[in-house]
Image 1 (cartoon, rainbow, N blue to C red):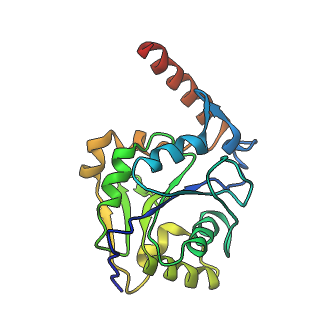
Image 2 (cartoon, rainbow, N blue to C red; image 1 turned 120 degrees about the horizontal axis):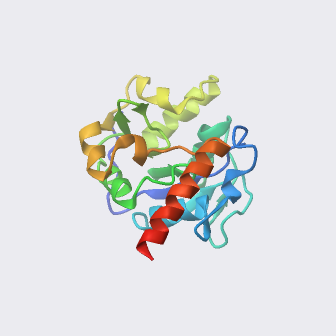
Length: 207
């Protein structure tokens, strides 16, 4: 099922920003950081790699000037991905969740360059990170079929028979920083407070 795509089309960048933010207690897609929201930060990094960027935000229009997508079938990130796949059929999607604020554009470019498989996912000792990854048409078709069967977990997609999966391994990820920092995930108020404090300290040192 390997379906390497035509590099002349390139991937479409997709910001995943449709989560319910239950653990955060407020909509993290609206939280400001150094003058921009988390979705705006993610869109800026994707735009450095992709000629087109969309936001899967359940159609809320969170980013002016960036096409806003309704969810597809299912729930959670799978629904956001399938909404984007429906909006841009046949195109590979380079996705970045808005609550992964430290995944750099250089890492996204490295993932996008691995275009000879159905999907590319970072993998390290903390597991697989499916929310900073590349999904080709065959992987998206497989995801749609899984969702129809009630299987929503993106990190289990590599187990789907017939898919060609490439993993960006820990040694490669480490070129961009410690994987635990690169894939820092903002889920709780405590996560947010620590991150804002650290980001503010770095900003003051650079000023």
